[in-house]
Amino acid sequence: MAAITIKDMSITYNKGKTFVLDHLNLEIKDGEFCVFLGPSGCGKSTAMYSIAGLLEPYDGEICFGDTLMTQMEKGKKKTFIPPQERNIAMVFQEYALYPNMTVRENMGFSLKTKKVPKDEIDKLVMEQAEKLELTELLDRRIAQLSGGQRQRVALGRALVRSPQVFLLDEPLGNLDAKLRDQVRYELKKIQKELNVTTVYVTHDQTEAMTMADHIVLLSGGHIMQEGTPNDLYEHPANEFVAGFLGTPQINIFRCDVKEENGNLILDAGSFRLTAPGSVTESLKPYVGKKVDLGIRPSDFEMAQEGVNAIPAHVDSIEPLGDAYLIYVRVGEKVVVFKYAGETAPTEKELLLAPNMAKLHLFDPQTEKRINN
Image 1 (cartoon, rainbow, N blue to C red):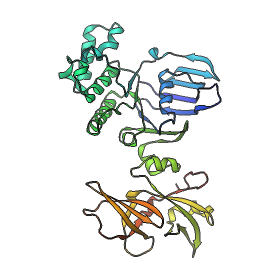
Image 2: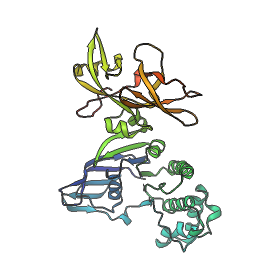
Image 3: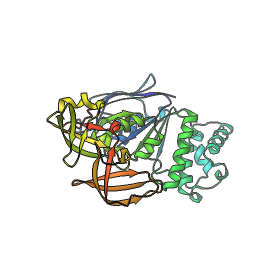
Image 4: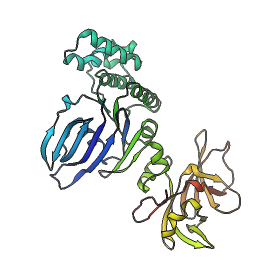
């Protein structure tokens, strides 16, 4: 297996005038499951294709372990190892299986082209077929398989090669919700068993949060934040990260910061919160200015009269089975509150209390996080 190191990698399609990726720096540890996450057009698939050798960067380096795979300097190629020599395996959203071959033949095809002995091919195919629950399907043709079965064949075809790097570009996109959950679990389990360095591209935050050891969240060709799923969810570096991760989205309020009787007050107009001591030092430079306050839907509770209670008018309620999404109006703003009670509240007027230990504060100009 191999760690992946990317240094100052830039990619452009018009000779340096517009960059799809701009000075990307990244380290992916050996055996890590790294997810490239972000909206369409952010550069996540472009970064993966560069790692695979399918794209030549305009500038920068890519290393697998201590081996230099790519070295470019402003459009000039210094080192470039072609894809077939990088010992990688890729799986795409479109499976690209051979319909005239059986499952067994599809899974072993790449080994056959490398002149691997037949006994060895049969052994490797059988090992992966057992892990992916494909043993009974080995002699079926691809046309006889469901979408989920075809996806598992595509994964198995990649895994039989024992690659040093495994690259997956939205591989679950064509599966229905139930099957996506099943294959997601199987894929993560297999990755851990094989301990293969894996890069996974998706725009689905649920896939990223449940599968990743390391999330790289991109936007506009830049890394917005990287770290563990909990790092990004609990301590978003900016408003983009806070808004991208979490379902439903985080609630953002523009607040005036005031000092009254030795306390710092977050005044949103429709409600006022007394800032807890944990954020006082971060807020002091903003007295007399504005900040953006983020509160996640799950960080509200029903409240009684008292300090830090937010008056809210119920607009609509959506049952989730184990909880309710309650859409309320706070002043002129629609706010989402995730309520875990057994029955939905019947009152139209509520008081909500935010978890004061989980406030997210951002600078309105830079959108960067203020509090630790």
